[in-house]
Length: 140
Image (cartoon, rainbow, N blue to C red; front, side):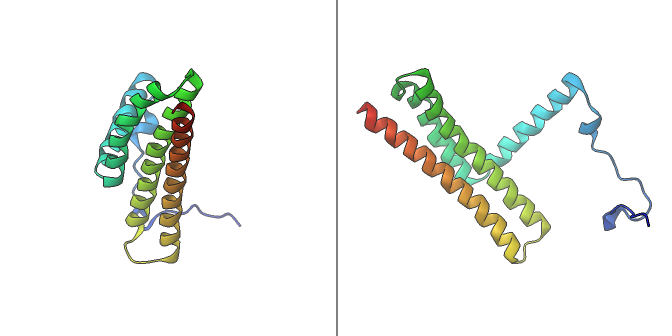
């Protein structure tokens, strides 16, 4: 018995599923559009207060990494932990947006997904604070 592929309810009226135009692009055209989507993502992230706070802190810490780091490796590690917080916050916001898109009603799995994303941000923040604390202790 052959299994039929899943077709979402809004596409069951025999109309073809529209292809994502990005999938059909190649080369520099694809890169150009992907960069635009990434910038849109950063603008969406900026709408989140937590991301704005972390980005403002990053604006201070990233230049500070060059002052505090004694070697290129220390500068890299200090800068990496700051950027890692921003990346984690963006991914957490993506999880939250996806969960909210599915439904705003309370559900145990939705809560779990959001809690896991929040825990990831917490761990990234602790890693960053610990790394910077260690570097400050060693420098001062």
